[in-house]
Image (cartoon, rainbow, N blue to C red; front, top):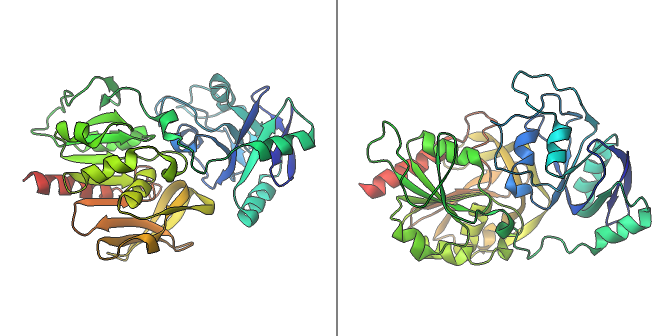
Length: 376
């Protein structure tokens, strides 16, 4: 089935749908990972985006229930050079096309993804429209232009949980409070995870290290969180413009100095705003499993997984209060920081995805060490 991909600057690509009829409008982005498409599709940070994979063959190992990072698929469309309709892997339970169709997400193949990615790298992220229904090129370009875009838009409210929940037996557990028992762990550390678009593997790692985790909606205020008497607060990843997220920055300001705080990705950006800094949009963002990040404290270089289109502006931060701890070796952008007075730190990348595969897991250990130190 013919599908057109139209960018706001008038660029058109022609492909074929492998999921049936459909339309999607969003921001065109690309991911350089060679594998992990299911984790990408179920990452809430991709809400509102049209994702193009640079690796040419996608779908060859199918989909399974264990690799979900949330309960839904979040991109508005998924674009690949070549789709493999016959997965071959002992863990596969479903084909990628059926998986996308179940969630109403359009999949398109059969066009020059390299040309699209080179174009985005040259001109920057663009608004886009993908359709099997409207094949009028001028119409599609006009509809792409007419989309409002992400700047100032609060997408966190679309992905955050409605009610608090815990995590046990590798799954969400309904309920409020630290009632989940960690087998074999005496006096476990209590972590409140502020859900701006949390990924399941973040919860898996923290509970696997002996923490009790309570996930709360992004709109939960500081007083409610502190009343839960956590040993630490985890600020999750999430989609969109951090400056458009309502109320969360004020919540984080109310937590600083009163508990240990660890932020990842959007959580890192929100911490930057809470410190009094500013954020700005990157030209085409960092998305993939091969981003080199240097730890300025140790001098080590980590191979990191990333998915973000915004960054904290380092010059907007008070250097006497905030220390830069990590930088991106591709473009020099800020990748990590810590507060010099309060037990608070963050990174822009995703240590839970671990493409290294263990390069960045020390960050969760650091979080636990800080909580133990404060608890003692």
